[in-house]
Length: 249
Image 1 (cartoon, rainbow, N blue to C red):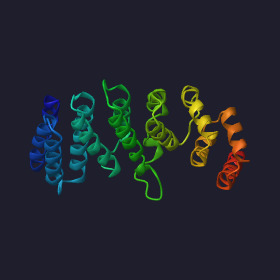
Image 2 (tube, one colour):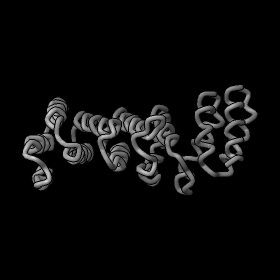
Image 3 (tube, rainbow, N blue to C red):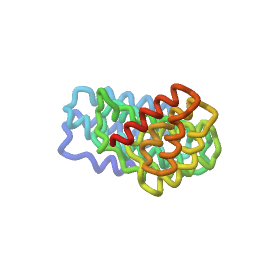
Image 4 (spheres, rainbow, N blue to C red):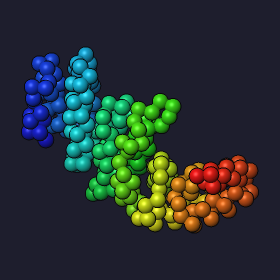
């Protein structure tokens, strides 16, 4: 990783940026969350005042270092600290291409060996947080910059954990996706979506309405129509409105 940072010392950077590059080398070799937090804060202060292009390039380098740290380090606390900083870079719209951040967090949540449930939930919540700058009224990213739905498909395997908090976070992630019509993804999440649509919890039935609309599946449409006659007024009214939008589309 340190060799990678050395390779980016190019003429495109001004002399003032050299110290920031040195900090990136140090960040790549940190061993504790406290040290990482301290160095990244110093890095942020160091690049203040550089040109916009230089800041962008340096932050991209930082983001890739953090991504590698999340996927390679053995210390859970260091992984989480790195993930928190990576999330901040997306939320502040500091990255020109935020897609790889979603890929990193999905991979961390699904493939890291011996991960504790609390850490897994933290990554899922960070994924949700990374959608914020895609939303109006002050969207910093366009939906075209979101990675394809296939990026989020591995998350569906986490439903098998049967953890309520994980399931809730998963559904919140999938609710962020503008369209869900790929057969593989629909097949994986449809059973849970239909279970929420039939839940005794009115809040779950209400929350699932937008996902039922986006799934383009007969069973999802049937569940949406059923909710149009729900005993809870707020669910019933919102389901009817959603059905009207579906028919109008």
